[in-house]
Image 1 (cartoon, rainbow, N blue to C red):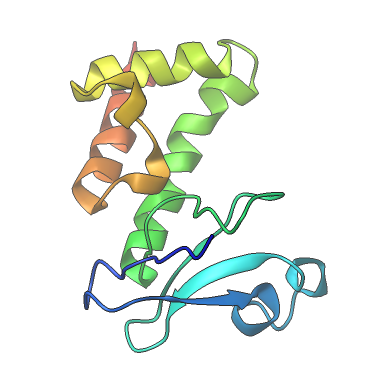
Image 2 (cartoon, rainbow, N blue to C red; image 1 turned 120 degrees about the vertical axis):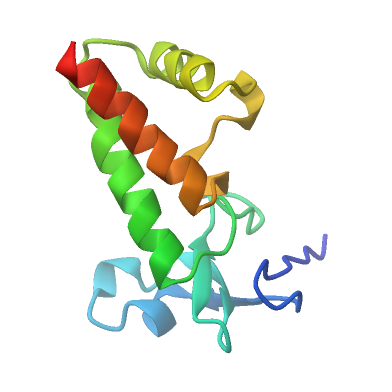
Length: 126
């Protein structure tokens, strides 16, 4: 199957590349696949053992930073074992007012990532 991934920034097809192009200093990532839009400096990794299925949407540096902040705020909820992962995502979907099937940080824009951080901070303040 030929997969086409479109860049959200310029609307052009992304290119399937390896981790060596994105992370030349990380030999452990060389064999991984990524979708990349070189002009926009946007990329996204692929699910391992898949036919290059993207882990989310292509992200430029600003969006990658927002996703990192969202994961840093959210992931401890389930990684600490205080909640199961599915429970944590269920809680997050309720906080964001979206369906569980749409609750995936990899698909979020900057605003949604900021809402994730805010919801987690509010929960931690209780």
